[in-house]
Length: 613
Image (cartoon, rainbow, N blue to C red; front, side, top):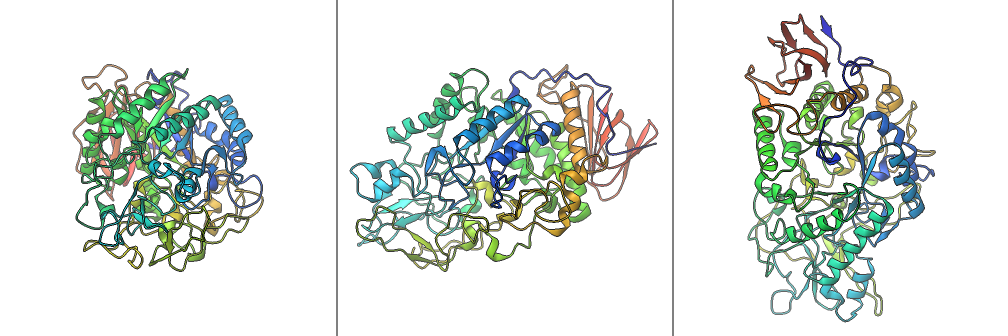
């Protein structure tokens, strides 16, 4: 017999009871909404909070547990909202505070929890604190990392640190001092040793918790504390070291006291309010420190995202990830794509093979113990858009180049910074936005888009090419997703979209895929339905098993992964040809049609199959 990839009522034979997983976040499936690219309610070509609210039924039908919203706060949008000027207000581009409140209420009515971004490593250059610092207000610069430069006249940066977006991580202001920005010059880093910084973010978290949000995704959670003395690193191309080697500006031990204080704050609220660390660390063991019982609830597992299509590498990452988090009593998280990386359909080779592997990888991810994150549009099998015209790109790293000094008029509190050569200051996006900088600020942004050059002596900050950071091509994963219709904007909104959508996306829309049992959308819906229904899926440690994670690897042919959980088995064939093996049970879901006679099974190439026994 041939078992089709999906089938109507697939999970009907199972109980509707979910896995006994304790707190909801331990086995939650959380869906990332990149707000400006999800749904546009007012026709300006940019997604907004009302648009998100209108599409929440899609997420409820998909079967996710929570939605994570990228920043929607007041911002000049130099970095896609990760440059925050007011942490307690909604930018008019996305709506207002009432829209945020109504979105949270609507999500809760549908059984969806809401996680919002918080950006504590840096503010916008337009934040009142930074404007005060540049205006010379006494004590204002102590909230940031201002330093005098090196050399007889202080004309060299204070150290050799590089920005993740390329070039030096320091900008000189009109009076000769320098300030640190690990990302864009428009994003000055805060000094977390200052008590006003700690108090301010406690207040910000309470503001949104009081509004009803269920938790926070913490941007650059590993970066808020820098090594004493801000020591040199001694080499260039530093973006390539993130997550691989110790760095004096990332993963310092001092960040953990901040996260402990935030855990106490979260625990003071009713219900399970969670903190999720966007953190990079040189090892799984270092990453696990962020999710110790008195710290945050989850940390993104970027090692899994970076893993190649290789069964040995996958098994190693899975084992090491589970071992590290199990040691501290925390769940592991799994993620394949986000707003800072090339979509995994394309990373896995693109075309039919890339899509087949992406479907299989999604099923593998959803069968592992712990929590999974989905990036908007992956349930549609969207590929990376790699041919965007240059004048539509808005990633700040795309427009880096040789930098020039911008003079500061006397008496003007606006910051005197240096900006990319031949790039205009970012304008507020309108219905037809021009080129402006925008990107997520997390270091996962470098995945798949590494540095172009590096090393050598400290460069002249006013003339050095910015070529040591990201390649600036992350807009391709942020193209607004298609909902319905035969041509752009495919139901995204009443008018166009801020990034152009490909003409071939009509067949990938939500409307086009709904009801098609072979579509990627219906595969995701079926997988999430089964994940809720089958007792052996979801949280680690469910059911009797010699392994406390509830998972056991079994012998399998070369190129195949086979593991069991209580009452459940998963097979992944990474080979480009079919593989035969004894059937581990009864097939309940497969990413491609499976041939089985009940005793043996012929696994299709680049496929994943779930089994019940």
